[in-house]
Image (tube, rainbow, N blue to C red; front, side, top):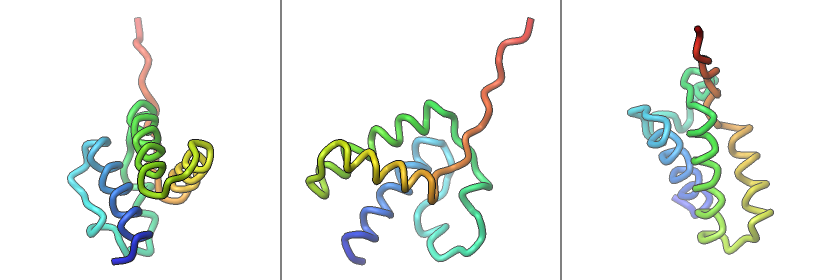
Length: 91
């Protein structure tokens, strides 16, 4: 596994961990369907994942914060889980 694949694996595993899904990178690697649309995460979980990913990329790749934020935005766009609509309180 090359460094790029290792980083993708770590980012996807953390996304599943934070969203509470019992999946791993190995479960979705190579799938040709839109697997990332079959699972959801909350906006708060997504924000936490992106924040974690930025710090992870800064450490692993020695990137600036702006570069890491841009990369995480692309990762989220490419394979981030669908954001579930949070239900407001009804009175």
